Image (cartoon, rainbow, N blue to C red):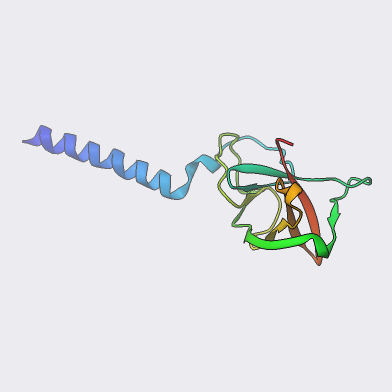
Length: 129
């Protein structure tokens, strides 16, 4: 009976550790220093900031802004140290939590998003393009 109890206890402990790791997202911890690119994850695709001629973000005109699709839920810089981290929808490298995200009105620009920061809309483009 004692052996069965020990096996159950070990099995329960392993399940408990697995559930805690899943709840705490342990994949964000690591011992490396990561260099982040300015991006946001949206619908399982990375959107990267489009630089302007002077290496600042490209500004989008207010008239080109479509509907709001969401806002940043988690900022990675300073919190994630593992290169194995799996990005979630609305994770961003530098953007602050709560930063609004908008679609671009032009149907030909479905691969672009506009991010509202300090009174301006900045262009982010899907990484594949």
